[in-house]
Amino acid sequence: MSEVIYVDNDPRYIARECVKIPLTFQNCGDIECGAIVGIKSDGYGERVRRAALTADAAASATQLVLDSIPVNKGDSVYIMKVDGSALENLGAVTDINTATKTVTVTTGLTAAHATGSFLFVKDGSEKAVGVLAEPISDDGSEIQANVYIEGIFDTDIVTGIDSLSIKDLNARVVNNILIV
Image (cartoon, rainbow, N blue to C red; front, side):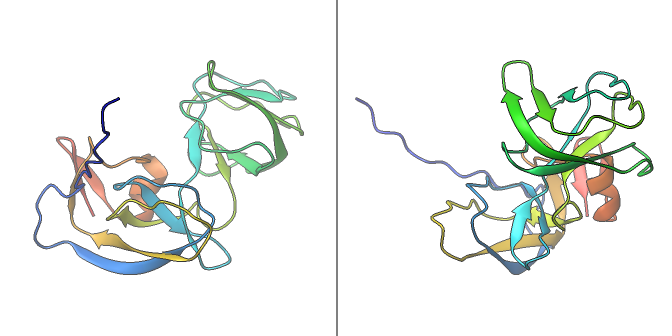
């Protein structure tokens, strides 16, 4: 049996000139360093739990194929088009197939959604506020962690980057570098 040694990644591309603030997390699950995070309506931090459709979804569809699975069974989810229009409440996630990256929801779509539309948990954390500066191991208690709100980051390490998080952070991506 070999010993597993934990190695942390630093999301910063340039170590200086990054501004960070403390944020409290609770019951958020384990979150890796470099994750894009937001603040839930209860004031606690949470990773931005959003994924894009990888296949068009017809009106009344309840099974959606995504680029990742950021949700859990029982989560109440919403969908919207890439431009932020056509927001729909899809109810709870009833099934998740990780092999096909498919989630099943209780309420069918009222309108068709094209590839790229976003499925997300609407709890306040869908608005990105920063990049997690250190990993979180959730044990159910309150955990304070630092979040970068300004800086230059390596997109190979930062997770959860999409067009909405870039807009929320007032950021841009140039040559695989996230500038916030």
